[in-house]
Length: 383
Image (cartoon, rainbow, N blue to C red):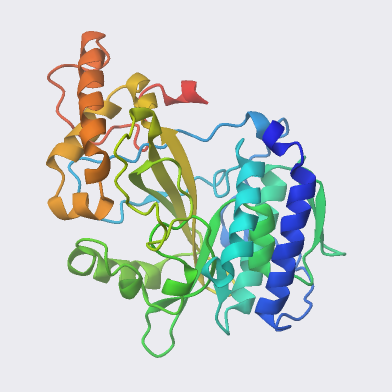
């Protein structure tokens, strides 16, 4: 906890820097607005989350997401969203908020931006998130709708929601990214109109804002051929009461949160790389339609797990080894596995044999997506 001993002072400094940057950025375009008392649980038909009355953020572990699928096909791979899990807090909360504020102070519009006409959707999103976290974590967050004041007892701060842009509010309190798309009335396509994102690798808000889905995903293998039509149709037909969740993943050196192509560490070859330096990064994502504005919100959180942890996770080494060995070349290139493959593959081979010798995995098991997807047998013991 030594790193966080001066947490309050550091956070306050970042908050001041970020706020001044924000005031310059907005150029006084955000007018004061009252907090709406709308019951979004009733309006959307998505139930309120179960309250965690004994929640301790410092002891909370992220669920061990392992969204590995085989045979791998480039699809949306959607599941119904767990109403308890739209926003998930865990022990990195303070560290991540600090990191996000610091990134915004440095990068500004690469982190937060919005286009005219997105203001109502942004406020609606903020109100829905506030209602969710106050219901899920009632001892950590409280909202006074009459005054518009939101209290965060983890950081010991109070924010006035009536005179702050909603995306900046989310940056200050919620360690997840939120991207809003709205239907273009001329083309009928959904366009990225507003967002806060501190967890992007190889892209940022400024490079994607104003683009339709096809252009946002232009470098994704097989997107145009296999996904563009179904994605556009899904967005058009998405129901308010049917939020979904999915996961994407990669293997990274270290734990990079925000990394751009111009950064020195971007996909650099590390000559003395060790297994302990390599992590699984999972971006756990949700997608839902907002009931009033009918914007569609894409949100995600980045979670990191040391690859060495797979040694004790049944079936995971075998499944990942299959993907790395036999995955589609375009997918493998897109994921940039080549810089870690020489270290990860031998370790996985060793762990596969260990798990077979221990009887955890039958030697004749044919690789497939696990029944516990996106987890693995016995995953609850990791919490």
